[in-house]
Amino acid sequence: MNKIILIAFILLLFVITPFILIFSPFRIIGPSRISGGNPGKYQAGQIVWSVKRALLGRKIVQGDVVKYNNPNIALHQESVGTFIGEVVGLPGKNLPENAFDLEEQPVKGQITAGSYLIEKNYSGKFWLVPEDQIKEVVVLP
Image (cartoon, rainbow, N blue to C red; front, side):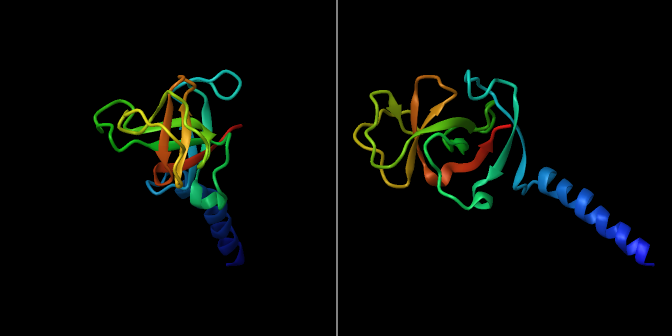
């Protein structure tokens, strides 16, 4: 009887729990495929692990690679409104000339509190992304 309980516990711990964490619609950790490329940081098609922000329990810092949502992108588009990019500016820093909000309107001045400047796939365009749209932090292998 003890062997059956031990086997059930091992299955639960090492098989069922990771399966739920990775493949559940409410997953907190799992693989992501990068759509754009950035020499030196990540490459198109590379598989990386992304972790829900709440799981990390830390603030976003400059240099983090994050997945973020753009609610202005129609769901039928290929990107489905989820993008990946590097945080290149924190609140209080000056915005560059080619900075845009999520509606693709140019923005000027400083990065407002609760927002981050993100360069998407090193395209040369910068996006001012509200913190509540940053869903996951990418953990590069």
